[in-house]
Length: 445
Image (cartoon, rainbow, N blue to C red):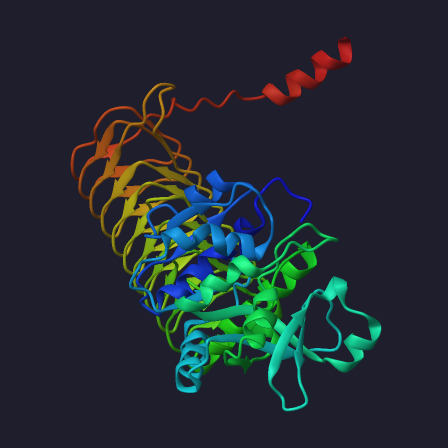
């Protein structure tokens, strides 16, 4: 991966890839989930903290069989079947694993593995079968001869179901003389020679695709992205250009919503029904109500937008912004940690920070809430029905009473009573003939 980050912590659509694997396994309701960690152990533990998994440290990285041997002491004594899989296969699903379990149990196998076929791939072990079709071994790809590659087309997906009694055969695995590792795949040959039953569960390559390079990371992300978008299309969401839409698996979208190109819907975002999300928009960890229009090139972070609101274009809602029903937040308006109640309009070139704004307020173009004094943030409160004229500065802490007017170009530093007009402009002077006198003065110089 050419990275200082542990491979399994590289993100696929906003989440470390190992989280997808853990979630897929958790859907089986296992007695325990154990993650074997080696390089970057502390970072992996921190990423998975609070998820209820246990960790076992593989101090010496001597291969997959050694990793499983390391974890044996942590397996519950009453465990009957062990599921083993890699932390870099984020496309595996709970549904697939359930089907795998059903096959394993109905066939009464001692060991079952996932298999697939794909002539274009390398790096996957070749499954060896005898003349009767029984699985007798696995040859690691780097130790496979050209003749063996031509003969054995079935590849090992690296996912196993192993009966607890089979784990005793791990001690019979010998270190590979070339790599110096103990291969878990060697257990297949050992138990086959001892007459134990082995079965394969065929899948498509997409289900078990692992990640070892940045190119493979991208490929996995693309497969997941298309899978997610296809699912939402079936639920009644329109994507104008699915190829240019990034959609995280944790996002929820209501029926009859339209998503335009070059949009990024990330994190735990929820979008209601009949919304329109125009191009260039990024929404992260936010809740969007029904019939909301998000216009072009808008950024929304950790905010809540109620039904019927219109946001943008070129708007920025920073974290903890709460937008009421039918509110209009327009061109180049920034809102930060503020509540804006129903029917209010801030259409142009304004900054609203640490504020509570009532219903049906008009915020004129160029209005700024001056919330920071260099040490602390202060609150601005604007009551219902207020009219704020253009190019006004509201120096917090300050309150504008219900129905009051603030004249354009005013700097407000004190509370304004309800129904009052606040104006702080200097009186205008017109100096007759000033321009002509200036021209004459310049000519003399």
